[in-house]
Length: 479
Image (cartoon, rainbow, N blue to C red; front, top):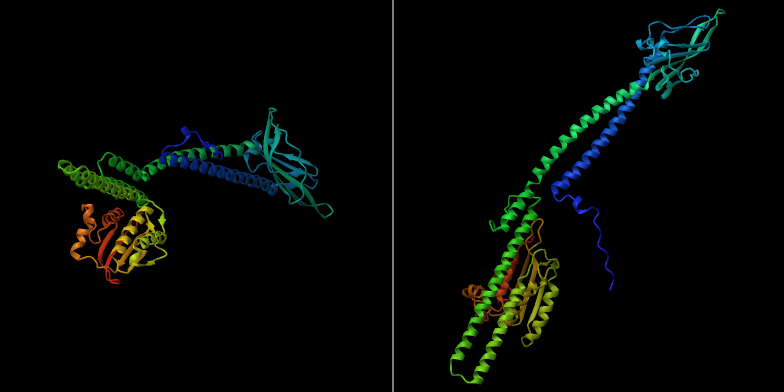
């Protein structure tokens, strides 16, 4: 015997798992919302940092170009810078905004550079630009600091005493404290996450309300099921969203099937009790008479056989009324062939020919035993009363969206047929076993009960093809 695989351990402890659809959906939506807000915040923060860095670069470049447009080179190679800077902070020591001009004869510094120590500045080639940072500096108080730097290489044309134009290369460096950009980013992040937090809370509350509203139909189904369990209702109502209609229809079908099965069992017990009353009454009558011992023994044996047949018959009917919901489709032709082979042996002296006209697409959606009961009783009835021919016709019945197709089964024979005034009597319920043997009544009560259990229809009439009786079973589309 093969070793059984060990049971799989759950991924999460049962106490960690949400126990309701609302909790599951709220947890999933919350995780997705938090992940989305975090991703959106990261993207927006990254975009702001890049934009803020570009803005700072453009601002420092504008300062450098402003200086470049206002400075002049003297004939001795010195430089003249106007006293009014492009920003007042260049004149305030330690203001956080600094400017340097590096030219062949030296270096010019703005008044704001007094005190801090800056990294080395090399001359740049004309039209060369660089934006770097953060770079380390030493503040006036000796503490470490960081700055962003924009530098550009330029060239000025100067007339010499010889009348020849001379090109003088120079470079402009503009520094700004890193704290300016960091402060902007910090303010933006505070506002961003604050607004995102408020938005997240509002969205979570809206999700809770939406989930409660969207899951209300499910709670209504649970409430109606509780009413059915308490006996306050017999079935679920039809006022449900179409997504839940298959579920409620299946539940209603299950409730009705169980109720019908219970009624079927009660009817079977009632029929059995009713059928046993006659042989029991016969035995009681014989015991009260002066019959001999041999006569009593024969009568007891006869009535016991009869009761045994009645019990077997009623138990067979009870077994044929099993659960039929959600059964797999059953091929019809193999069962029909098996039944006909047995009937041909029983009625071999009559040499009855049975013909099939079975559609290849036809299927019986129910218990195989029910199919055998239907075909067996109908075909046996036809074989018994047919002269020479029996015809079995099976084809798919009516269809409905999202439902199993129906089925039509017809059994014709060329026998004497059934008088129209006897049809109702043959099919009526409550006829005793002996009465059912008359005419075409053998097993028709079983057929009638089975057809009703499948919510179908049994019609009895004359066969237009063979001239005898016709039994037509129509089963509607199922779930």
